[in-house]
Image (cartoon, rainbow, N blue to C red; front, side):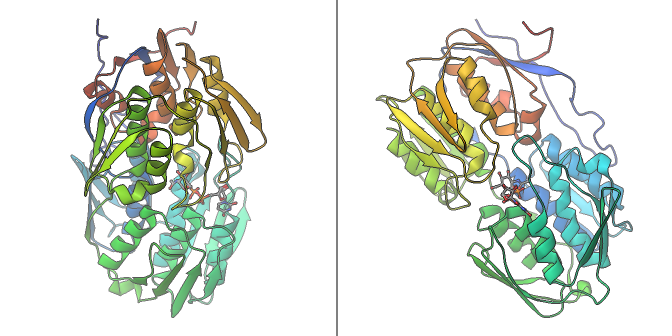
Length: 448
Ligand code: UD1
């Protein structure tokens, strides 16, 4: 028997903002003992598209960004840009952003508190106006998530900061000037904010220990298409030769595929045996995850823009430590913890990027996993099977992993707080159903 599917669609049309978004309390009901097989088309990367949208502020006129996922975080960023004065229109998976009307440099708490990534408008606002007022983001469930490195990096470019009642006020009394910065940690957000200010700073900026994520390369590609001069993107040293703001212009750009969405579906294939093929992703972005899938007993085949995973024998335990790219991504930690939970043997997962990213473990333990947490290590002793249970998404990736757990568990699983999943996965339920899973969105009733 198949469960009835409820359709879900996000429409963020011109000027509509979040109107029409399905933000009600829904849950996902999963029927267990399922399998996943077939092909799934991967959407554009959330973590790239959000920053590409922010970068469009720097080009007065209409930029077009293709392959933008239809997810709630993008709708929030659209609202952030509208609040600044831009026009944002979605046409299928393309966004038309006209930044010529941007006349404000203030982003209020009401928006930043809904999505921490709103802080990525800080760099481009400083680049465009020489000043910015952005509400300070708070922490989030996966850690304190400070912004000290963003501030230190921007200060070296000549930005002065003060905090007024929770709002960060940035000014550039002597203009922006190039500088040599060594980041304490290759922070993705700090690298991006620095890049988006440095492109219009006078002189040359060198960012050492820069983040090397594919999304950084994507941002640099778009900035260069807008007229910026950047070399070294994807390496630990990025050099930016500043140009006058007037030399930056709008552009057309296509977002890279989402390696985390791809890795999530590959984990699903590894979990059930597959074969599952993810289309629209450069396998290079997933090198470490693919190495771990192989170490765990999976067969993996790669083409130019696809990866296929299948597994015939048992899952085998493998240790994992999360690290900045090209290390194992923290955003795939929960999905691989699920694989470890059902693997033969004991695995140790070490979380090095966020200090509090093991909340998923306690939900998985409620389904029968055997996990001990010690500081930032999780010791996972593989069990024979999991049992369906009511569980809660503690964050975006944990939510996606819990749905996968429900697919292989015995019985039914209800995943609550799925608004986290909607932040980053376009039509997750629809894509899983296309691979044969018995999953459905439903209005949440009283929890049992
Ligand atoms: C981005 C991604 C997120 C991913 C993370 C690491 C987006 C919207 N989010 O987040 O999905 O998990 O990269 O790959 O792109 N830190 C500081 N001070 C700072 C900046 C960061 O202490 O000024 C710490 C953070 O608290 C965290 C670590 O550094 O512990 C990594 O953060 P960072 O690389 O900046 O991640 P985000 O850009 O927030």
